[in-house]
Amino acid sequence: MQILDFIILGIIQGLTEFLPVSSSGHLVLAQSILGMNPHGVTTEIVLHLATLISVLVVYGRDLLDLLRQGRWHYIGALALATVVTAALALPFKDRIEAMVDGPQAVHYVGIFLLVTAGLLLLAEFVEKRLKAVPGPDPLATPGWGRALAGGIAQAVAVMPGISRSGSTISMMLLLGLDYGRAARFSFLLSVPAILGAVVLSLPDMAADTASGNVPIAGLLAGFVAAAICGVLAIRFLLTLLRKRRLYYFSIYCAAVGIWALLAN
Image 1 (cartoon, helix red, strand yellow):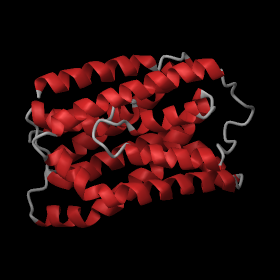
Image 2 (cartoon, rainbow, N blue to C red; image 1 turned 180 degrees about the vertical axis):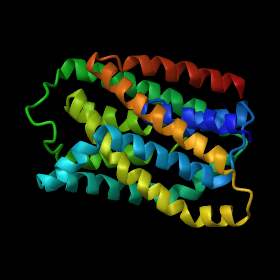
Image 3 (cartoon, rainbow, N blue to C red; image 1 turned 90 degrees about the vertical axis):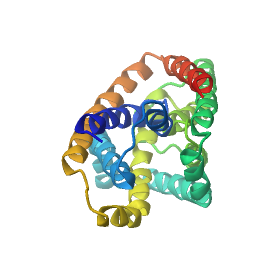
Image 4 (cartoon, helix red, strand yellow; image 1 turned 60 degrees about the vertical axis):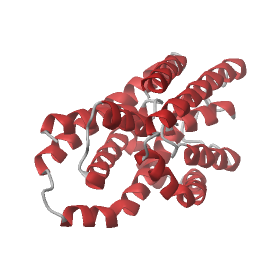
């Protein structure tokens, strides 16, 4: 791949990792329809690390406050959700990878993007009915029940086309959190999720890099593009959430999902 290809992948990863439109689904579409072929798992890890930086730029102070203020209930909620995600998602890791690499990958992405569209629309509808009011403490624990549900929602998002941020934010909205607390929990939950994905991929990365020909310049360009676009995506999403415009992404996911099914 050329450096421009890595930059394009970085932009796609950075934007779609946090916007509720499914990064895995868009990467499948980029690879299958645009003909891109990234350099194995190394590219995946580098782009994931870039999006981790994005979260830390926007929510790093919140993470520090959780530790400095001893918000152990909130940290425990994040830990519970992470454990639930791992317990539910890891047994299906090989099957999901086979699905992503299989000949029907674009078809599956189209179907699951439509699922994401429906979930976002439902969450928007319920939130407007509940009219949750932001509390005085933005770092108030979401509660163990919501944490459990958030972990389940994040586990479901391993399917290509199901958005991680979309499913977790939607779940929190359905369970009565306001937009700000729902987004904060979702993005903070992404930190252990991304770190876990990176750790699990390290053996494959070692084998990948041992083969040589690692495109350092391309990976660096993709990293920078993903990190910058990730920050922009988070801030853009937070702006739309404050305006209660989640349905914009529902329309987008439905359109891309239908297009993927027709293109396939």
